[in-house]
Image (cartoon, rainbow, N blue to C red):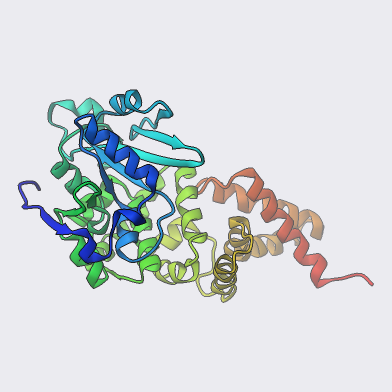
Length: 349
């Protein structure tokens, strides 16, 4: 969908001023515009600024190709094959610069590849600002801020959705989920993070999204699950997730009625708010605990207790790894947590 009229809004009237933006992101947009390109702050950082939060990082959108961005900024490099972008480094801060994309590939299908199910495998078909707005996933992430004119550009009604607390896909929800099933998990995360209402169209396609997650690389799913668990709103996210088909697709061995899971997530959320160290390994150990215990009991009928626990841990983690690729440092931590439980229950004097 293109041809929509853009709303140009006074950013300061909505509490967004250039002083609240990273000086490095401002430098990137200024240099892009000086070189004759577009340079706009975009995405989650604009959303967070409008909500009065401090963004963790800043993204810039431009009509310059990744190669042109690299030539313009000395401390930059190109990353990604599925979605090629430029990273511009300023000391410890990294500004992500993406080129405007468009949703329809026409003759350049070789640069926008889909799976048989419609999932986007590669997306490097460049377009205009308007086309870029309509190919983004959520309306509240398709807001652009121009620091030079101090305007917010809104093609999709994102500001209205943000103010009303409504999480909505741009375009047909089922099509967006078929393009990338991980968007369903992002919807759950944003619902919890922003305390907003999930659009009924998104809720209606969660079952298909859950089925399609089997086609998503296990390593990518771990990254998304880690974001949910370490968001500081894990308890809310789990509450939204547990009653959907997504839970069974991601953690088939988890007992949805186990009170230990929300309790552990509440504890982790409190530690994050207190600035204490946390690890996703702990929450993964809790999520898989019921499955591990059941396997241990079954194996104890034919093996010594210690051997049963060891084999149960191996089998449980191996099966989960087929869905979510848990890095070794966390899987070993999970094993240690499980093994420690028996020592805590049967302590020696």
